[in-house]
Image (cartoon, rainbow, N blue to C red; front, side):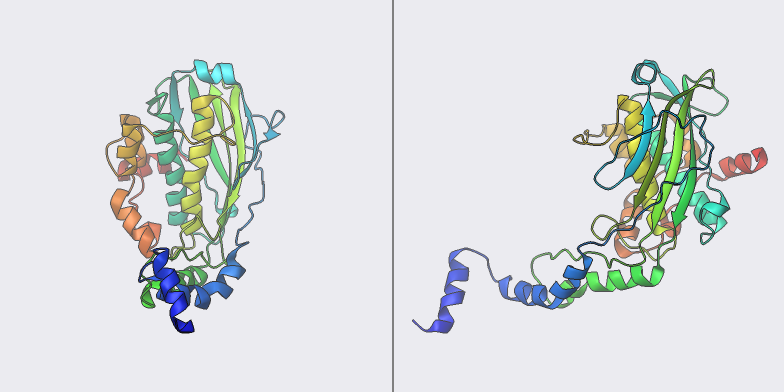
Length: 306
């Protein structure tokens, strides 16, 4: 047997298939870039704005990607049946590089995702209605996404396809220009006493956050991650970290695909972009293009109340 025939026969014997050669070539070409990306993760400072009713009982409770300080009165939170989501606040000094519209979009993404998450256990009521708990959230820091680096990441991600690679080859995002987000939030009872609170910070990373051509791209995506963590803490009465994720209800799945939310109160924050948003994100389009934000009447009401 000729020496050059040995490798092809062994490849065929283990069933790797016809895509092996092109995949191997692509891997060799991009391996230096992959080595540089392995530690690609932004950090988020744990800033505090002083807006919480109390910071005294907060204790560290970190996840794999997020850092947090939190406190939750489990018995009081689990005893609550109704909840109201107050519009999140995103002051200009928390992210001078973002526009007013981008800050509104990120703040609304927090509210919308949180409303859907809380609907898993609570009855969510609208503004002006009595509730056992009321949430308040404030963005304290958001570093912008570098649009040039994000665009370069999208270009790098199509290299395997351009080389004719048959099998999918995951290409991490370039570890530069990554954004971050820090938020503090609390849940107050009918008497205005804090029953749960969280200071949460997380930076975008090269592996789980998609690059989009927007300075608000990472903040927008991380806003949903915060709402998932804070919402889970209120739904379960315990830290959301160090646990297996819970299966979402059909209502939550429907809302995430742009459908009608379980409670009418959540309509105040608009509907998720759904499939259109997923496609836009996949293409690297700015979230501003797909997300319509809160309904016009809600924006007018918020402006008049400030």
